Image (tube, rainbow, N blue to C red; front, side, top):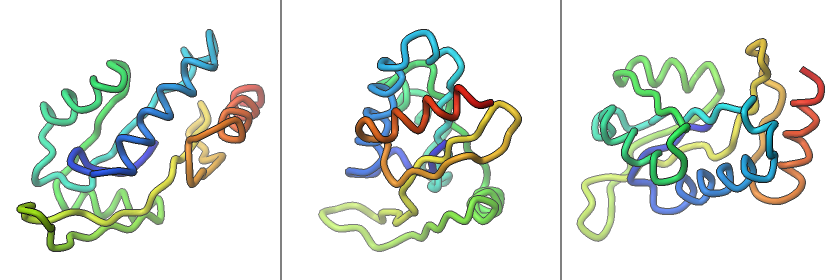
Length: 133
């Protein structure tokens, strides 16, 4: 699970692409993994926008959104921070947010917070979580 927004210029698309690559590297075990993207910009990220955005990476990725109050509550539960900032180059605003991927086991227990989903270390950690439900 990761927090982000569909107009994120760098972290979100890179991480979603890395997660897709990690899943393809897992082979059959990938069926046991569900990527969940929680928007921190519910004012702009509609359900349709989330679905369309995530389908670019993998049609199985799920997007979640709530209203602003619900989003703040969920972010607080995961100790994730986000805030609107004035945008540049014609953008009304951008959203600064905590970057990282939460790996939650099948029982709903947080098992890993990875600052990046890149590379063999993340893949190795994910395999450990899958092997030890």
